[in-house]
Length: 122
Image (cartoon, rainbow, N blue to C red; front, side, top):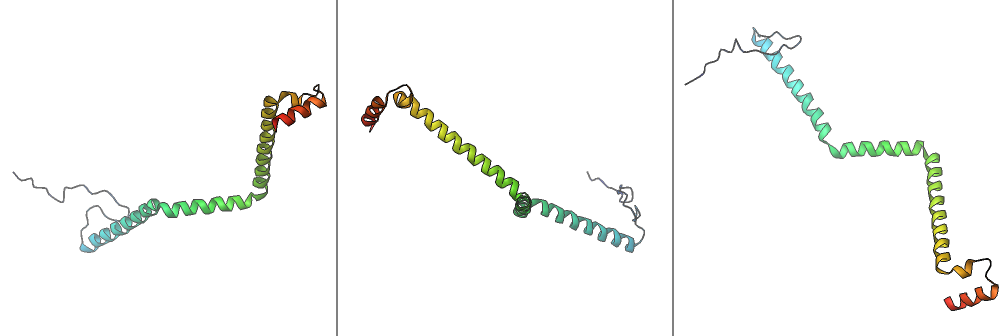
């Protein structure tokens, strides 16, 4: 069983500037050339989207440019974060020391007892 198909009845999508049913070989060549150009453009666009390395480089260079534009605010923010981290570490160390040696840090403890505690801890 064979299916025959009349090529003249096949629907061809309308393309601006090119007739739907080419009458001459020149019109057919023009349609083929246009299709090739469109296909080439589409392939180039897909290749550009699939090029992960180039995309990463573009994003990295954009981030570097943004960092250079905002260098002073970034440095201030970095300094503030560093200062907070140091302050938190110092406070934590004091808290741990007070928990381990409560007599050493209590202002009501006589100096002689503090010295004795420090000698025993050493």
